[in-house]
Length: 287
Ligand code: OGA
Ligand code: MN
Image (cartoon, rainbow, N blue to C red; front, side):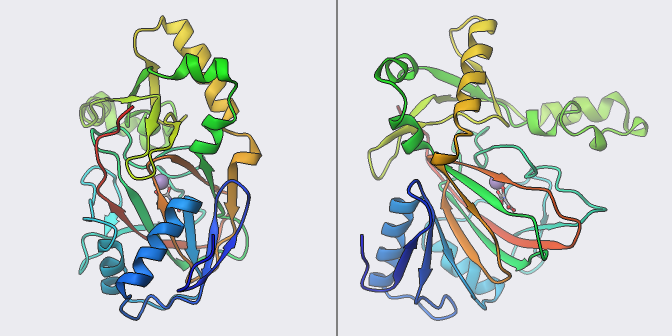
């Protein structure tokens, strides 16, 4: 598709678009915003290069997509003047506990997973630290008719404790913390139940809605059946044809539609990496 307000460079057949010709430090017209929103729906993730914007300007831009939804339990430090902004700041001595190397969808362990995320790259290491997104509509549509029929109508539990657990993040559970720490952490997260095949609330398209980081169990299945099917789907979702891998530059600003996508943040760098993140409120997923 072509747009009047900017050029859109498609980055892979499945998803990803780089937008050229928009300056986010200026107020956007409704026409420009409508086209940006359209490009987001078409490409799942869009990136604006070379943006020089203040935290207030990032918040104002994010608000055009919806209400920011900062998480109390995400563990990210918040920007002092703009509590909507999570500070994701890492280097070799401070590895990313949450976003690192696990395929996930943001806040999927809640009743209303986020609509999308606006991530601004403040400092990017010379190499490494790419992010990969998966288009879950493309993945669903590439399943065989028989497999689509099999997964349609299933529901699964999503447990945000999993990526924070002592099995996945042993470095968070040093001996001095004791069992109360584990119990407290566990109590912060109540699993949410979502359809395995979700209908996108705007496009009406169907896509897979499971992720390796948090989807724990398929309802109404035997434990072994659930493990077997989830393992298959997690493996299937690694198919490179469904994804786009973005090599960040400092001052890139990315927006992704979190409703039918996965992402994965590579932790293969030792130099400083700093991102400012705003997540946007979403709605209850429907089948
Ligand atoms: C996130 C996230 C990926 C990255 O902001 O939700 O997963 O590459 N970030 O920083
Ligand atoms: Mn994320």
